[in-house]
Length: 305
Image 1: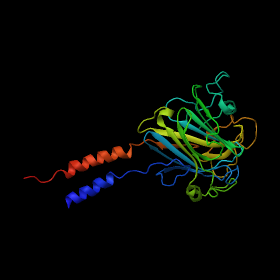
Image 2: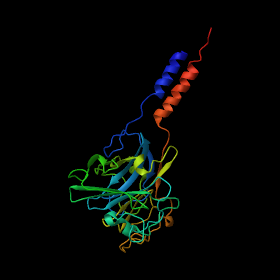
Image 3: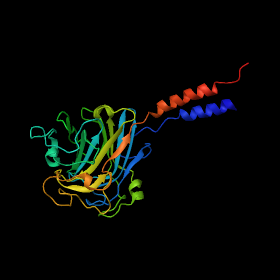
Image 4: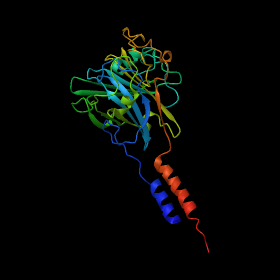
C-alpha cells in the first residue's frame, strides 16, 4: 500500500504543466489572471477595449495576454515594462532633443512629461498599431536610453491579425485575435468584471526574459498597458490596471481635452494602480524534481532486516 501511495504521489508531481500556444487566446494555456478592467471603454465597445490581463513566466519567457480589441484605425496599444533597475518614472524627450529616449513613431515627443504610478519606472515599451485593412505594425524599444529600437512593419504578412512567433532581432512572439464581441461595454460606467474576465481573445505576447534585462526568480515584472490615439496624443480610459469607474477618456490633459501631447498626465492623480505585475516563480519542473526527491527520500525508508 505504501509503495502504491508513493507511486501515485510521484506521478502527480511529474505531471506536465500546460504549454502555451501562441494564438491570441488564453484557452488551455494555464494563465493566471493579473488585472481586470474597471471602467467601460470610451473608445467604442468592441472597437478598442482592454478587458483583462493574464500572465505567466515559463521556460525563460514572459507570456502576457491582454484580452479585448484594438480598432483598425492605427490607434496605439502601448505597453510599458518595468523589469530591471533604472528606467523612467517621468518620460523624457527623445535623445538629441534634451531627453533619453529613442524617437521611433514619435512616441517620446508626445509622452514627454507623462508620469507613471509611484514605484513604476519603464525600461521597455511595445507599440502595437493596425490599420488599412491589411497591416499590423509592432515596435519594441528601450525607455530611458536610446539604445534599442526594433520597428517591425506588417508582421502578419498582409493581415491585421495573425501569429508571428519571432518578431525583430529580439524574437518576440506576437499573436492578435480581434474576434471579441462581448466583454465590457461602452461609456464610463463601472465595467462588468465577470464579463471582462470571460473574454478569451486579444493580444498575446511571448517576451524572452533575455530581451528585457534577464529578471530572475522572485522578481515581479511590472506592466502598464494603455490605448492611445493614432498619434500618441489622446489617451483613452482603457488602462490595465484600470482607471476608476466613471473616468472618461484622459485625452491629453487628463480631462478629455486635446492639446497635442499626453505629457500633462500623472497617473498618481487617479485611484488605484494603472499597472499590474507578473512575478517569476520557480519553474514547475524544478518544483516537481524537488518533490520527487523528497518522495524518494521518504518512501525509500522502508523497514530493514
